[in-house]
Image (cartoon, one colour):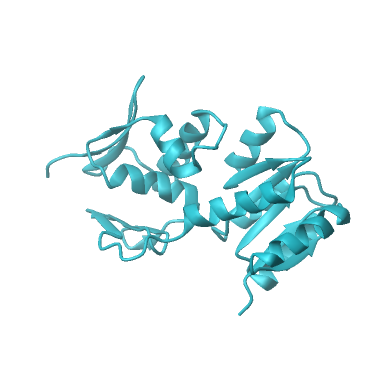
Length: 230
């Protein structure tokens, strides 16, 4: 079965430049020239990863990313011609795994693809792949979170943040450690990305102190997955 990478960009020249480099890595390139076509190709081909331009006709990359994240954790690398921090943060907070700024070299794109796929790859032979706390069950190999046995719709990054906290209960983990371990040491964003993901996790799990576990903010330090004695 082909391992597909979807390039969604309205500039055909960029697609032509990247295509041979990506194919050299063993992937088949699928492309889309606008946001609506990107969604159709995503549903049809189920790609391993998506290179998603922010500025596209019919539907921009941010909207496409938001729609995909409602149904899939497929890794997404946002492509933007803008270098402002707000654009990077907007893309990442929409659920993207990484971003890359035009102009870029094909080698840089390949390095980003490899880094993202490496970060999201399941940990092989991990006997502690499942963590359970009362009503909560985390399975990092399948990237699933269940509450009362019901699957919760968390993104990959949200699951990774929750897993990192829950795998070290009652331990304070600072924002920089979360950024380095989950987004990678080459990520140039700031701690607001972590704060946004924590906020979304709390909202999706509807945390309001009803369990014997919770995600606590330790001001000036970081976050802690607090587990109380039953």
